[in-house]
Each structure stands twice: as structure tokens, then as C-alpha cells.
Image (cartoon, rainbow, N blue to C red):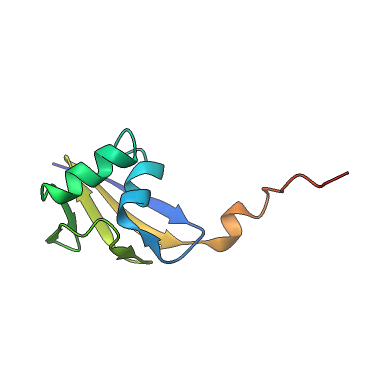
Length: 86
């Protein structure tokens, strides 16, 4: 049985390899690109080999027994502020 969770993104669309990296499904961008090119990732039940595949709200990503559903939530990151110049 696979592990299911929801992952919020604040930017839409996001490239698949970046999503795998920030969701901690892989250790880094290079590993993400390798896993994608080897056909180990599926998006909406289809194997994807396109590293820069655009991922949007509602997409379901599966890899290594983990499944995440993407949710677009731009306000979830509004508490982050950028430093101001002095």
C-alpha cells in the first residue's frame, strides 16, 4: 500500500523535477532528473520522462511507494517576508 499525502505549492505550474526536490521525494535535483529519465515517476497514472513537465493543482505524483496530490495554495506562504534593504 502506498503512502498518500497532499503537497501545497505556491507557484503554478511547477516543473516536475523541482517538485520532487522540494517535496523531499528525492535527495536533490540531479537525482530527480535521473529518476524521471529512467521512467520511475508517474503523473496521473502515466509514466513521465519529461524533466520539466509542468505540474498543476490536482495532479497526482507517484514515486517509490509514495503518492502526493498537488494543491495550489498561494496564501500558505504569505507569512514569509523578504528582507528589506537598509
